[in-house]
Amino acid sequence: MPKARRGINELNYVGRISGLKGLMVIVDIEAKLPEENELLAVENCPDVFLEVNYFLNGKALCVNINNAIELRCGLRVSATGEKVTIPVGPNTLGRVFNAMGQPLDDGPPITANRRPITEASGIKKYHRGHSFELLETGLKVIDFMTPFVKGRKIGIVGGAGVGKTVLTMELIHNVTRDKKSLSIYCGVGERIREGNELYETLKETDVLKNTVMFFGQMDATPAIRSMVGPAAATAAEYFRDDESRDILFFVDNIYRHVQALTEISTNFGLIPSEGGYSPKVYSELRRLQDRLSSTEKGSITSVQAVYIPADDLSDPAVQSISQQLDSVLVLSRSIAEQGIRPAVDLLQSTSSLLTPAIVGKRHYDLVSKVQAIMQKYDSLKNIIAIIGENELSPTDRQDYQNAKKLISFFSQNFSVSEHLTGKPGEYFTREQTLSGVEAILGINSSKSSTDKQSSSLTEDQNKPAGASSPA
Image (cartoon, rainbow, N blue to C red; front, side, top):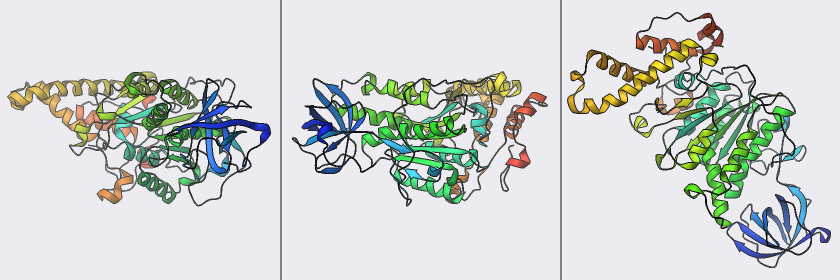
């Protein structure tokens, strides 16, 4: 943040601190009324950042962004006329910032071309367009069950330790293979080790130069963690609207954004809403998701990891997030415990983009067949536990075996975990995936010309040396 606001300006004098409670700072307004989200300066505390949250009975309730401990009642406070800003533009590529635009790498601070992280005034003309461009991820289960479509949102939903972060890293690795995609990564409330590993991976693969990274990890205050999402969205909006670029936007973990807002709400003593969350969390979440939309100038395609507290898919916050996504890929703990990666629940995963108009009739029909078989498999498991598989009818036995083959088929070795498993990463084209599913189901089908056109890359272009082919 700029240092020009040091000291107390009598013309901008606001009042004095009258109360402190956790991150909340209460300022009695005695003179100038500050704006909402404005930063306030405190006398003799040059490194303290107070952001106005809301007003109540002649008082400004502020957030102590960095949780500074030198504050005390009676200190004088003045308005700065500034808000939290971050640098935007080409000079941010390859850099790592926190939510306040301060560098977290070894690079110099960027003071030019900064923008406030709060949403700009005015109405943007969002649109979804009439064409659908499939983006191949190389991951069989995603390309098949939850197709990746330019300008849309996909969520990776799961509890702790089921592989959300690793799957997100593999998506970043695969989707940015051409080293031309402009990517923005937003790390919210996750482990510092994971952020460092991702940074080193992008650096080694020469992808970092086309990526801007924002972090507010688990060691940061709730204020920082709640602002890192809007900060990354501000950077994405600049490249979309000012440079007419198409953006790949990765969030790990969007649930931690909700959690940070709830922690701040608790500090302010607000009455919680359903599930114990902040009363403003759903509107704030919607506002952030709306910013990650496409306009006539460019698109933002986002991948969002979503943590499930206590593996409860019915959690109100998880439901609210899922409703704003086009595709939801659910990771299952029971499947992860079987050693299958990615541990995707083929029945729980859904996508509104699975239509013949987008993926083609061949792909759509195959998904319908797979879902029917997996539904049957789920119902047969309890029967087999009692009477055994040999007592099933030939048709049921065949469907049960096909379901197990499909579960195994959709498992895949990751490139980002090669150093841990010793197994080379695999990349599968969409055509390889469809052909593999047809082989398991015993379907002999020549793909239509429409499906040929929808497969953007050929097997020879996409399959790296050492990658195995589907059965």
